[in-house]
Length: 437
Length: 174
Image 1 (cartoon, chains in turn orange, purple):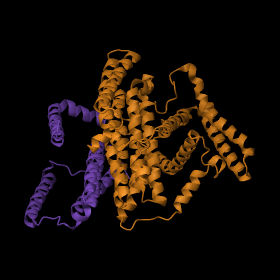
Image 2 (cartoon, rainbow over the protein chains, first blue to last red):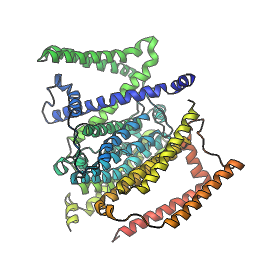
Image 3 (cartoon, rainbow over the protein chains, first blue to last red):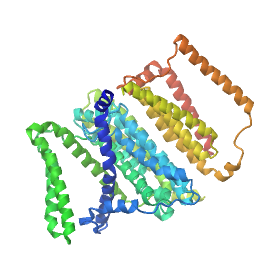
Image 4 (cartoon, rainbow over the protein chains, first blue to last red):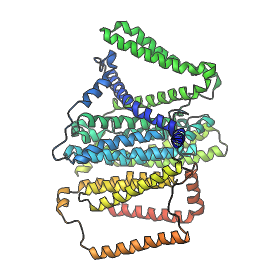
């Protein structure tokens, strides 16, 4: 019994956090899907899902239910065991990555010394789910999707990793907590120190999560659905969950490393302290809008759901207002930290969607060309430039001249790279003729 | 359970998994399954690094071997026609050589354990009581770039030469 108490004392909070993440993540992923459909609809001047719940707010739950009770089809000549396991590998890899991610100064399962590379290492294993699923389906579309996915991930993981190395150079640590604390003591987010590095990571992370314009592994006009072609029902849903969980992971890494993690914007500027009121007011405004729309719903049940969402936002606003009670002031970093972190993650994911609905899909040779001729050389140059930046800062340069010098140099090399590529292959169709000849 | 006991259990779990994965890898006929078991074995080895407190080695093992090399392995395997490969004889009939090598290896291992037990020159691994060390990456970097700087640089140059060689061999026209 004593042993159990001792065990729980050490591992209680990590266990609770882990359970919360496993429980909340599918719901969160479902709502990210809804957000994506709504954003897409907005950008294409449509309404998007409107039927299930007010403004389609219950759509993710309906979708999940539908997928759960759908027939689970396994192709005749599939490798059954591998076919079963493949989605699980993907989703497990995506979820394990959360164990090192910090949602706030308190909400973190474990602050590892190797936090950053732990997340990269574990989430890079998710590709086994894709490649084995594509192979086990015993279908040409699936196999082609899996092969494309592998080639793409290997190419862009290098660029993403090198962009992260640049960030870690600035932080002088790989621990998630120390990276954020370094940005706090420096008083500047690393996106301002390393704008090129952030851009590289943004592009590489879009490619790594297989999203448009890099979504060749599941290009529906060429490959039906790529590696997921033969999957249906719940297993398909698990792949989807893994994809969206991975999106949140890369957004979390970018937020931690480049956007100041759980810090409030301008945390060091005292006359901007009124920004502390933003979290409760934000939820209050959403709650007020929900209540305003409640009587206008077409059916009483929809009104009820709308009021429920309003109440939920009101409760969240109350929770965010807790730190303003003097007795509970200690809860401020935890609550507001989580709010700012998730807000930044949401904005990063929004930028993903924005890119997705703005740019057309790349052709595969263009994708590889971009990865190997532009992203990887530039990310190596970026690491060198950030090393120079760190030395300049140590020898007493002030921030902006150092940033201008190093980022300017990196951009110059980027322009040279593009110019060189243009000279070699003028016009977007050059790759095609080259391949034919 | 104390942390030391937990890491001891973890060690035996990972060790068993690594050995099981290795055995299955060489006995299974399907090449893709074989690769999956190799991944299992490599991951279990990474887990053993973790129980020994070597976090950085764990991460490098996962990134390089599991995330890099094994993905490339499977990538190549998929391009091979598996139906043909399944019907080919995959095992060399060299029983006696294998037996001899096994005896030699087993003898070596047995001797090592015997010396360790009687003379105490080698510890049988038990769990680290202290858990993960807080400065692992820093210590690793210092050891690599200060104490073992020359061997490290030599190995780097060797890898660079190998890389350039690979590029030269695959490119028809430079």
